[in-house]
Image (cartoon, rainbow, N blue to C red):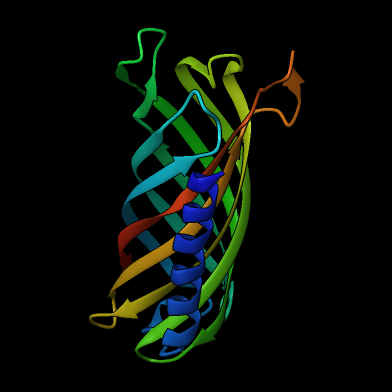
Length: 189
């Protein structure tokens, strides 16, 4: 429970920082804008079989109207968890996610956004160990973006991601709830 509380505090700080930034962003939320964002992320987990997850990947997005767009996010996820010998191990996974993102506060220098998405999660091993190697995943995120130029900006987001089922197997939760964040450099065209 202590770990969950720490994750909630970290997400709360990210959310407060993101909402208070209220600065805005460059021209990257205008209708018709396409963008690509390489990203890295770190997540803690509520499932005892997974200690943390480090992610890396990229997202590509397009703004349908000013401030509202969709994103396709693909990432590889080295999973760090304890195996049966209580040693840490690193396993690879692949997770494409489609996200609807709304930038609800934006200007020439920064923006604040929120998004929800669904996708898949395929891994070398069962995630968690009593789960499956292919899973449905859903996310929710809140973040902010600060413009460096008209076409390049930095993005920081707090994210919740659920992987797998919401059911239990003999009292063991079969899903994985991940709390953390990601950082990216956004290139708008």
